[in-house]
Structure formats: structure tokens, C-alpha cells
Image (cartoon, rainbow, N blue to C red; front, side, top):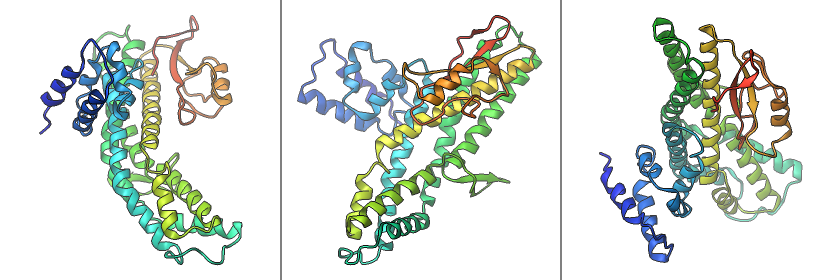
Length: 350
């Protein structure tokens, strides 16, 4: 059972008014990070309690750094979900990465010595693509259950906030309750479907099956990254063992990639559920449109074009072909509702 008191006391002991980042303090904070590694998603209130003067401590440990990076206006459940998905990915990557690298080492010819006859570039690419395509990535299925739970928590968090904001004028009653129930059902389905799609799978009659049409699947991007590392190693005439090391030292199974995937998936579901909330409110008689709000002063061309579209109908797509952010990894854009009557964007941001 999770011991919530232990990390809480440890954090309180560290949070002094005089913040001295000496070697001893760094070592103590590393110990706390280890204690919280498996519990941080459930114990996010501990991190949220740190004052601004103590934020410098968070730069010492990846998970705490991530926690504070995601503190920008998101609900506690959403912030916890980002951390939870990151932790789930890291656990699977740590367990699964060496197995995948081992599969590739075993599949490469003459693994004990350098390749004497280095193929041409086209042969390298074909060999690398073939090996990457045959790698067993079924271990990624272990992500489906925890990511489903975290996506649903984040979706419920943002969905409730979005709906309450745009439907504030709708009185309590059967119609409003039904809309809330429908939004919750939508959130659950989006979370379940996306968690499976992330690893190239889908649910059919309660069973997981392969999904050849999955979009933005980490199983596909993982194969692409493996192919590139293998091809590079073959081109340089590396041994199978060297290519194995290249895979394990790449970003394929890294904490940074885990964090990027988590942020992207949370952005996707929170914006999708916000759009669902807008549609539910519209179904109750509130006229709404949507608008794309860029998340930086220097957005990419696609996001800038989407923002330039201005308010559009809820069922329309933006210039990029998307109906809601994110348009790409690291996209900080958000979806807001707009009341056509005054053309003013609401405060509903995901």
C-alpha cells in the first residue's frame, strides 16, 4: 500500500526558506525522487504544495521538473496524468528496450564481427526496414491499461471544466445531467480507443486486435527510429553488438521521449474532450464556434494558419485538416469556444 506520509515528511524537511543547493541537498532530493518515482501520479498534491521559492529544487529531478513544467493552468488530475503516462512509458521502455535491442542483434548477420562486405546504401535501408518491421513490439501492450486510466482522468478533468464554463446558463436538470453523462462516456471511449491506437491496436468486441490504420502510433514511430539506427550502423560497418548499443543509447526508449509522448497525448485528449463539451453545450441550445489559439509567439506555419482561420463551426476542420490541437508533437496550442453573437473567445482553454 502506498505510504503517503513518508515522501510528504521528506519534502517538508527539504522546503526551508533558505534554499541552498549544495551536494548534500542534491543527494537528499535524489533520495526523495526515488521514493516518489512510483507514487508521484497519486501524490501530486505533494508537488503542488511546493511554493514558488522552492521551484528551484524541481530542476534537480526529471519527474519534478516535468511536474512544474506542466503546472500552467491545468487541473491537478491533468498534471498528474502527464506524470503518470510518463512514468508508465519509462517503466515499459526500461523493461522492453533491451529486449528489442537484443532481437535486432540476433537478427543481424555476422553479429560477432564487423560486416566484411558492406552493402550499398539501398541494401542497408532495405535490410534495416526488414529487420525493424519484424521486431516484436507486443510488449508495448502493457501501456494500454495505465494510459487508458490516465487519459480518462485528464479528459474528465478538462471536460468538466470546459462544459461548466460554456454551459453555466443551463439549469440543473435532466437535460444537463444527460449531457454530462454523454461527455463522460465520450471521454472513456476516447481514452480507451487512443490508448490502444497508440500501440497499433484497436478494440473489436472487447478484444485487442492489430490496427493497420492506426494514426500517430508509437509502435510505428518506434519502428521508424529503429530502422534509422540500424541503417546508420550498417552503413558504418558496425557489428551487431555495436548496433545494439546504438539502439539503447538513442532516444528511442529515453525518458525525454516518454515525456514528449505524454504531453502530446494529454494535449490531444483534453482538446478533443473540450470539443465534445462544446458540442454537448450546443446541443442544449448554446450557439458556439471554436477557435485555435497558438501556444507560443513563434508558432509553426500550420498552427499559425489554423489560428488565422478565426472562429469556425464546431464540426468544421481547420486549415491543417485537424478539428482540434495538437497539430504536432510539442504543440502548445489550445482550443477555445467562441460565442458567435459577440465573436469573443471564451476563457475555456485546454
